[in-house]
Image (tube, helix red, strand yellow):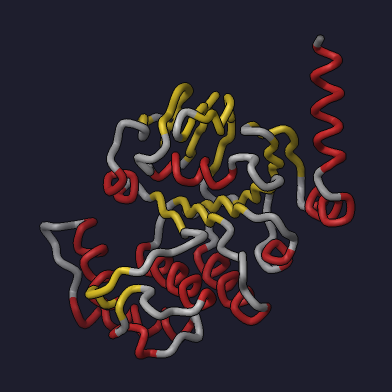
Length: 254
């Protein structure tokens, strides 16, 4: 499957953030999206999932040719999109176990998920992610540490088994042990039927989740793409050399 983003522009509170961004994601591929603060990476993630705070002002997003910008959030999820949040919110009164069961039931309301099979898969994934089994009975993210919240995002991803996962700086604030566990979650799903967009500032997570392609985003656009070697260059040189290239290209056009 192909998630195609063409000339996408979007704003929030009247401020233009995405400025004609074009990007293509395919199943079987892991893409890294890097860029300086304020370049629009998280905005892209939220626009793709349909966050109503953002207004699409131009361009298109299609999933295997179907326009998804007109779809509500739950329909995008049902089509196979998943967003792991940078700052997962707390949902008091709803346990992790019940939340995940209801989410899975919503994908096929006429065929409720078998409870015993669900519990078995849930426990297997909790063990795989090295989480305490009591997570099942805790309220969603309430009182969770930063690392626990990110592990729970990965647990949701494994249970929902999406076609495309968008990881919005899931590595931020994690210690090395939690980072390895989060990376395990992505790598477990990696296959010809799964694609991921890993949004990050740093090389750390890409040491464990090797990207097939790296895109660099500056000022609301993809300005440079290449292989994993780009990550090492960014780690050493920062983003200034990319900005310089963009300025040189703009002057050449003028």
